Length: 512
Image (cartoon, rainbow, N blue to C red; front, side):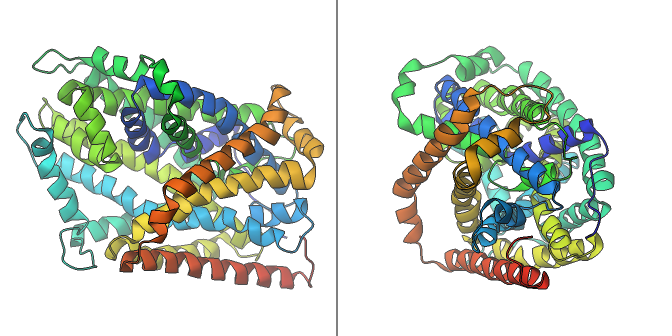
């Protein structure tokens, strides 16, 4: 067996794990979810969900990763096969490789938009718009600009992005592959040590600038912060707010992707997971709640007011991040510079996440097939470049892939992790694995949260989404929908064949 890599330092590990979690969701999805669910009404369910769902699932993934790393494996494929004495276990674990891989297919493309926008911001290429009473008219030039850059204005089923968009995508993909090629310590860890401080510096600069803004009718940053932090206790009876908060916590900590499991597999068998996991989560929460919320929401409330901010948020993350924020920057002194900083911040946050989502596939090819890192990265690059043309050129494919793997798949896989570890394997042994050799003591109440509460909440989320979204999703029959589904099916078939080949290579053994 090839000797596995390891993290070079504890701070590098924490920053890399935080970089995995800190992505576009922190600065785009969180502000939208908070604004669309009443601001302060959202924060109490958010904090409750963080304790009952986010942190427990985070520690479970860390424990599974350390457990697998001690046995020379870094993906759920082999880990599940150890925990569950059943021939299908390794195929169930395949979700921990295929889900992040499928997400990277379109995530890298969206990530490239942020680099494109930062370049346009720096050289004055973004549109300008005058202040008007109608927020929709105010944002229209930016809506048209985004549609033009992703080719959404084209007729028929095909998207036709311009050459510069495609070129920036290729550059973004090559940057990701180069970091992965460098390895865990020399690539991912070094980038995290550089990118994470830079992300925080840029976010703090933007937050300070936003806090100095005032609107013509007197709104300032206190109005924005008041919207976010003044609790509305009447909203606690609204199930929609609770589901939105639980979903955001789930996404922001990157649980259910399998990436944390893989990252944790590169620590030493007796290294701490409790404090490391909590430290990474704390860095992520600071970036999301303090910085992410204080930039986008506060700026939007100052310029547009609370009702218009809620309206923009209801239309999605792209409207807030790619339209409302640059439109605001277009009407302030040195706005071109601040727009450049905003999109560069998003780009670095995207890169630290996309390399983390790619690592499970690299680990699988190295650990289970014995490939060199160079060969694994080359194969990944060929696949990502080829597969990305589906969301780039076919309308609707991106949304379809995002629903099945980036929404539903995450919850399913996180539920499987908790159930297999605490119910199929052995809850007492699972708890021993989670609590051993740690620098801080995990309170015993978390045993019951991990075994009962977290899986229960995941089941509620799955049922709710199944009732709310699944019927309408299944009714879609356009070309983009079928293209997205076809990619998922092809990925699944490839995964099954690779696992079958890897296990047959071990002389017919059913467990590694």
